[in-house]
Length: 599
Image (cartoon, rainbow, N blue to C red):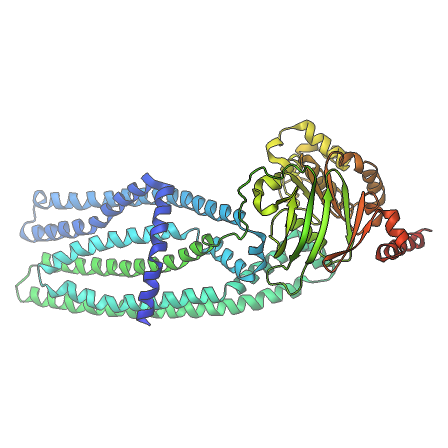
């Protein structure tokens, strides 16, 4: 077990070095000030003990104030200095904590943005991200503080040990020998505690999820309609009880370990103090020496205890910092191409050439030897059953994933050869479940092209093109209305949110527009209004439209029917209806449903 702990500690040392570099980069001169204050604070106990011995010996030898005044004033001065240093350290630590947390969050956020969507397809990735977000941000500064405390208390212990050494060389050695076993016991407990947290990360994430579900507004309607509150609360309490039991067992074990370590250390102190009392009674030491030794033992014990705690905290911080390092070491699978502008904007077509793709951890092909061409300035529609692979096209086209086989070509250039940031700037997408940004209407639309956020004319035009202008004009502050009741604004209907998302897609001046179920949340009047302007909106651009509604698909130049990851039929609406295939039968079924719905 001890060998394992030593091996684990050595393995964590590089993470500790990187954490110290991170703290230095974030706080630099604040760290210098912190170090100076710590050293000064570490030397204060020795100065107070020496002055106290002088005060007692002078008091015994003389009762005049003039004799004992310098030592008394010195003790008072050191006490005041200690208070000042303690206050200054509190301020410096607060400043360091803020800057270091900012730096850690920056690292996590920048790396999370760089990672591919495949990262989120693995459940262990969520455990890794949880440990990086929840446990790691405070640990670099905690490590530095623990190191500082170690240096501070180590320095104080050495000075006090030197004082005790003058009386007997074995006194400081006795204190060390009775402290080392406690350090080993505490290290063992910290390692077992860390492993428990690693093993229960999934359960802790689940606990947070249930807590969020019970309190979040987005789940409130179904919770009340289906009476799900009690069910989820009981699930939370059951999981919380299991985690609480484990944490309390760890806490109990930790308390016992600390008690055992403390009792052993105090045994050494009592032996040394008993010897010093014997020396005083025998006349080989004065009362001031006895008081000095008593204070030295007390201070040494306090500093040894702080040393043990500091060493334990360092070990714990190294283990948690390694979680952050593990996350930051996770590499994206999608790498930027070397040609920043090749193939953009679209001059001829985009072509899927024998593309096969299976999602990470998936069991079946989303696309199987898939072939498709999107000609320049043409509207292509994809229809098919759920699970046919339609939405996968968008993820591959935006290069969120790379195909397992085959190529996606833009004017003959492989997508892998194009810089993915340059590629994405040429694509505007309305996703099937677009994000509701809880901020202003202006930002919700302007996020389509953040560099043009202040262009009011373009914002107005995008809102008008998407059919969002009318609901926006009814809002109390128009484009500056906050779309969030949580942050003091207002809320939209699903159909109105869909139009805002459409406006965001049209706000980007891209050469390819991709629309995934663009009219799914619109009522029939809004759909007809939008489809009446659809060809004008897509003029001069290529468009890929994924839809279940054939009344929407029929506005495309060419329609492809997908099934099991392949195209099985292609043509215009009229051509496909006349073929009498899958499209024709589905079209007839939709028309029958519509006719039966009429009064």
